[in-house]
Picture 1 (tube, rainbow, N blue to C red):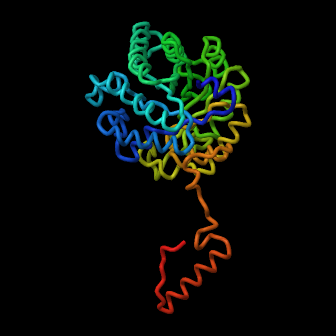
Picture 2 (cartoon, rainbow, N blue to C red):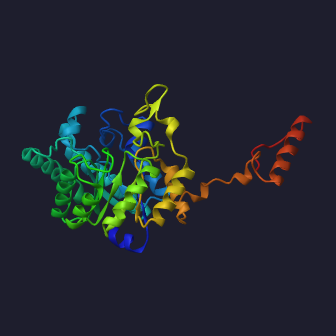
Picture 3 (tube, one colour):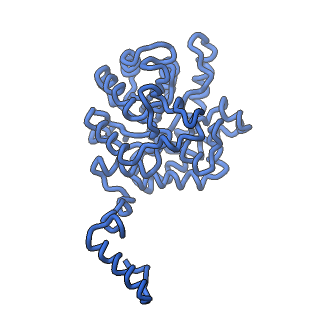
Length: 346
C-alpha cells in the first residue's frame, strides 16, 4: 500500500510522537520509553487522531524504544509483547478511521557493536521480537529509524524483509555525513538500495535546512524512494544537531528546547522544498506537532479534516480586514455608552 501511494504522489508522515507525548506529560524525558502505550492508551490514541486529522497519511506505531534493552530501564522489560501489540492496534484503529497507512517501527537498539558478532545476533533478535508483535496487528510496512550504524540498518532491513514487509530505513547521522561505522553517506545509500530497501532516508538530529542538502546527495546516489524526517527545532551551522543547542549557558536538550521550535510556516516551507527535490516521503521527527503537520499538508495542496480550523486572520478583531475593525470599534463605543452587547455574536 505504501509503495502504491508513493508511486502516485508524495506521502505525508506523522510527527514527533515521543517529544509531543513528553510535552503532554505522558513520557519521561531521559528514558523516553513508551510505557504510555499500556498506562494511558487514551493519550496515545488522541495524539494519533490529532496527527491524522492534521493530514498525516502514515501513522507510526509508537514502538520506538519498545525493545528489552530500553524497557528494562523503566522496569517494563516484561511488557515488550504488550507494548508492541497495543501500540500497533491503536495506530490501526485510527488509521482505519482516517484512511491512513500503519507503519510498524523499530529503532536503534543500543546493543549493536560493529566488531562484535554476538551483538549482531542480539540486535537481530530484538528486531525480530518487535516485528513479530507488530505485524499481526496491522503494520503495512516498517520504518527502521535513527540508525547511526549502517551495519545495524542492514540487520533491520533483513529482519523486515524476512517478515515479508516493505522497509523504510532512515539513518540518524550524528557524525557529519558519515555513519557511526564510518561509511560515507552516498555509499550507505547505495548499499541499502542494493540490499533491497524500498525507501531510504534520514531522520532526527537535524532541522530541515541541515538535512535537505544531505538528502539531495542521497537522491543522487540512489534511485529508490527517499524519505525525510527532520526535527522541528532550529539548528545552526556551528551546532547542526538539535541536541547540541545551548540555552542560557546550558544544554537545551531535552528540557529547554522551547526557544528553538520551528514555526509552522518554516515546516510548510520545508515540505515544499522537499517535494521540489524529489523526496517522496515527507515526514518529521522530534518537536513536530500536529499544527506543523497540518501546515505541511496544506502547503502541499491537501485539504485535511482540520483544515476547517485553519487560521482566518481576516476575522481577527485587530488583525482583520477593515470591515471587521469597524465592527470592533463600534462594539467598543457601544460598550462605553453602556449599551447591552452580546459579545458571543460573530
